Image (cartoon, rainbow, N blue to C red; front, side):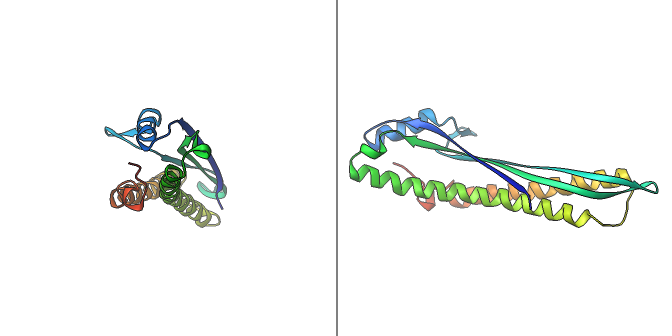
Amino acid sequence: PPQVNIESDFYEISGDSAEDLRREMNKNSGIRWLWNRYDAHTQWDVKWQYDWRAVTGSCVVTAYTTAVDITFRYPNWLERDTAAEPLRQQWDTFYTALVAHENGHNDFAMGAAKDIDDYFASLVGAPPQPCKTLEKTVASRVKAIRKHYRRMEKRYDRETQHGRNEGALFP
């Protein structure tokens, strides 16, 4: 299975009203894409390496490793624990939905990593092929898997309106 490396990164926000928190997230998140601001983000990348051996002018894959690096970026409300209960409940509902939405992005990263890992597993012990063909085939297949999951991820954000229709919307 792929090695999984997960990190969480937080940007600080401060305030004692929903409006303050919204303003702080807009100002401090640093997450922008196509003129839009977002409250959270999941960045991922699948890495791989394979070993091969020459066999009568062709190559066979002898070993491989895959790894997925996932980084979540979330707001950290500094006064959450001392805030008024209604605002804290509103925040907690939003934050739970926000984390759930970002975990959907995590699922795409894990799916891509698993499919790439499975692909390399299928190459170990496979019949030899010309080395250049093997190199091109691997690059093409891995690129196609990554592209497939990125497309699915874009559709997910479109369908969920970046989590808004799942409850990840703060005033």
